[in-house]
Image (cartoon, rainbow, N blue to C red; front, side, top):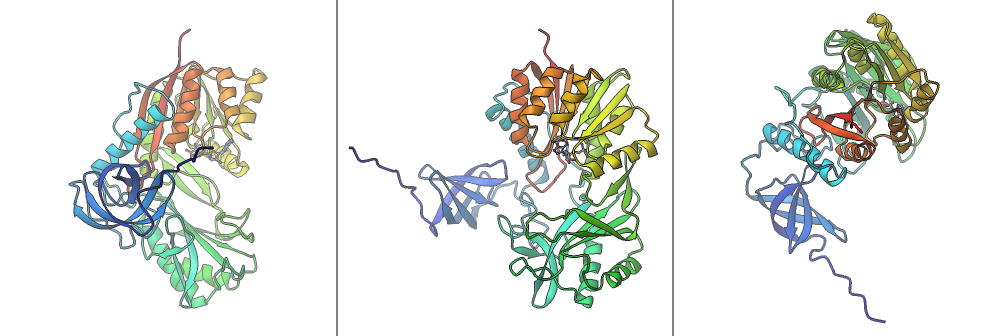
Amino acid sequence: MGEVRVKRPPVTKDDLLQLTIEDLTSNGEGVGRFKGFTVFVPGALPQETVTARVISVQKHYARALLRELIQTSPQRTESKCRTYRRCGGCQLQHLSYGEQLQFKQRVVEQAFMRIGKVEKVRVLPTMGMDNPWAYRNKAQFPLTERNGHIVAGFFAPRSHQVVEISECFLQHPQINMVLQRFLSVANELEIPVYNENSGTGFLRHLLVRVAVTTGELMVAVVTTSADTPRLTELVKGMTTGIPKITSFLLNINSKRTNVILGSRWRVLYGSPTITDYLGPYRFCISGGSFFQVNPFQTVRLYEQARAYAGLTGHEVVIDAYCGIGSISLFLAEQAQFVHGIEVVPAAIDDARQNALENGVKNAEFHVGEVERVLPQLTAQGILCPDVVVLDPPRRGCRPEALLALSSVRPDRIVYISCNPATLARDIGVLTVRGYEVQEVQPVDMFPQTYHVETVVKLKRKKK
Ligand SMILES: C[S@@+](CC[C@H](N)C(=O)[O-])C[C@H]1O[C@@H](n2cnc3c(N)ncnc32)[C@H](O)[C@@H]1O
């Protein structure tokens, strides 16, 4: 038998390489080549020459840490944050905002071509923000102990190590203020922090939500037990210092897991929800329900989705993956009837309440998985939708959901997605099953990060 020769990568761990960066990956890492071998360098930009130390080598690529910039890109900007690159929250603070928007447009275009195999798609320039900072209305800070003190932060990239932060420039300033107060009160009370190695202690995460239009604040402490010591004093210390806290919740997560939230909630103070407005609509948001994290761009996203739905007042619309029904309310204004479908029962309760409080009578909400509820609704002949709006989680639609959709055959589909790869995959399926892509609008819901939201307008092809 002949000898099989395995080609060895031309680099080994700890090598210091000089590289010219040619491109960015879809998650914002610089791409260089060493003797034709791909090396990813987070923090490096196209047109830059850098030195980088190899930290891992795989069969087809290596990853290296940026050491020195020999030639700098004109698009490089000074990052605002002291912990940038150590904390895993942002990836693009070193890239000018204009270039971030162009990068996101390219990511969507390339996903359509490479993954969806959909050519000649018109991807519009990314809809950006005037001020691409302080936009987040929700933070979940892991808590840990350092030198006998409770500290909060975010996880380092690809790790469970907490990078301590005192403020985050992506968060609404009120969230940073709550964090500071929490650390001072919790440290004073010496409430033991959960230790994931030993499984002892109580405090796991701090969740903060701000309703940007009303200023109401929700604080939730995630702990291992309902018997967490000194909770009453914690609540008092927080709410007397910050009167805008109108909701203080306890979330109990006793499992040894990386999942942040447990299933049990208790109201420790105030209301179980806070109230915010998106456009003219008022929303009650509970601790566990999904609400878009960038409320400023959400209204623009929803308006775009509604425009793509092409409503005239006569259409029956399905809002699949409807969360707390926020898109449903925007659509109901211009449709005959809207049916929302969502798997989380608490979100459906919120959706019904939101429709009621906003005086929306032409919307109904159904609990369950889209892949199960959509065929049920349509099989009974209850409804024959003209338009279906899809806004699935990052993993995209399950094949059964796409199958159900192609048998329902609505005239228009509006697909909203926060993951270009699964979006392109699903659009690829829909185009094979008789739909054409008419327009694609990326929306920057997450400035300074590689994430991008996209709205796609699809129309059923004429036979
Ligand atoms: C990206 S969010 C969209 C929420 C809403 N459209 C909005 O803009 O606020 C996705 C939602 O889909 C829900 N979900 C996930 N898998 C589902 C499924 N198989 N069927 C129905 N809903 C699902 C999640 O609970 C979440 O509320």
